[in-house]
Every structure is written in C-alpha cells, then in structure tokens.
Length: 79
Image 1 (cartoon, helix red, strand yellow):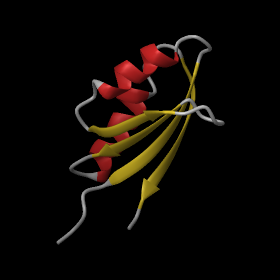
Image 2 (cartoon, rainbow, N blue to C red):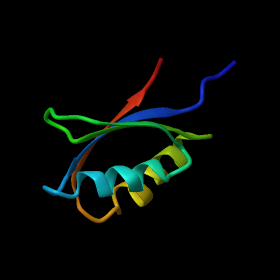
Image 3 (tube, rainbow, N blue to C red):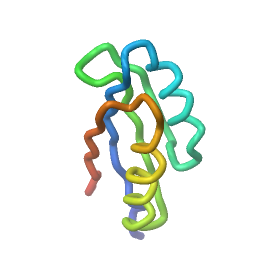
C-alpha cells in the first residue's frame, strides 16, 4: 500500500493578516490540518494529494498565490 504524497508547509504572513491567510489555507480541501503558531512561522499546514504533481500544484498555485503570504517553506514527507 503506497502512501498519499504529503507535505508540511510553513507560512509567513503579512503582519495583521495571519487570520485571513489561515482561513484561506483552511478552505483548500487538500489541507487536512492547519495551525497558527507564534514561532518563526505564522501557520503550519499539512497538505495531502493524490500525486506528487498535484501536491506541487496545490502548493505553488493555490497556497503561494494567497494574498498576504510573505514566504513559504515546503517540506515533502517521505515516510
């Protein structure tokens, strides 16, 4: 049984826009978990997809295009 491709995405949002960005990320169906944080990153999201290509598309086209995101760090999970 193969595991579904998954990534942890760390997000920095513009100051004062964290809640707005969090809500936008949570609205993406492939985001199975999302948390706000008071550390180096503002939001931590877990993304699952049917394929690596779909995972890449979700991160690059849907998450990174959200207004008020300053930066992201994506970490594909291999196990």
